Length: 369
Image (cartoon, rainbow, N blue to C red; front, top):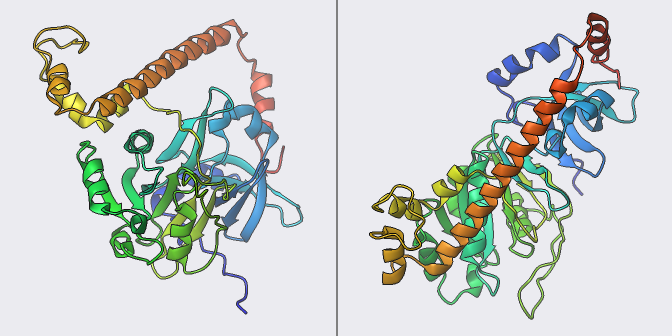
């Protein structure tokens, strides 16, 4: 019987000299750096120099967060007010995120951060009845929007009559992203992941339910760290087995693996330029049109329409591009409207008095909620 696993050090979790420099103002206030390693509904688990603890945000943090995206996500670096006698520790602030994986919150219009400060997003899709290049396009745009490297993992290669055909189908779409096939039943293809699993590199696995994200993580860890379920036999659709986001340390390499629950939908939190940067083939064709503002509908010498008519450009691929770009356009319009309303409200407020400023400053001292 094995004992409890050792708590990783901050260095093993990716703490660097640059982060220490960024944290300096918080250190002067007596706060400790910590990394978020798991998310719960109203709290999170984190690791600091004193060990692993459950924590929640302070009252001042909650007021200042502004939106759901301002709250801690797995992978975040936090400034912690540590109290050894407290049942839960208190998060006073977060360091700026280097990268993130986000989506539009299905329960509202805010950004939902799924994971933060990540190096690589492994987009896991299964080579079974649920295989969908359109879904892969959407995940790829989400990954690139947050600034992380994206790699497509085509899992369950043992179920495909020709896994190579699936790889070529994805590559033909012109993403420019790496595409790897995995047979998680027979542990084939896993050697290709070694180049991504360097010490303290943070890797997040994202995809639909049943794609095999948790199975891949269990195989890498060499233990059943995450519960898994069989997919539905009639249509290969999975069940929501993983219910929260959690970070694991990969023995040997020291890489950091983040598992995420399967997503039934992924409405993008991305800009139009990100979408164009994902669909590079379509963006390149658009640059060959006679008119710079070509709508690709009825203008003469339209390279996009010519490619569609000749079959060089897949119609489903193009339709998905239009759909995702429209989402990005609507998101941009909504954010601009919210920014105008915010500025309008700020202009209505009377200027802060010196006494109010002093009170607000005192409210941010360590330990205050």
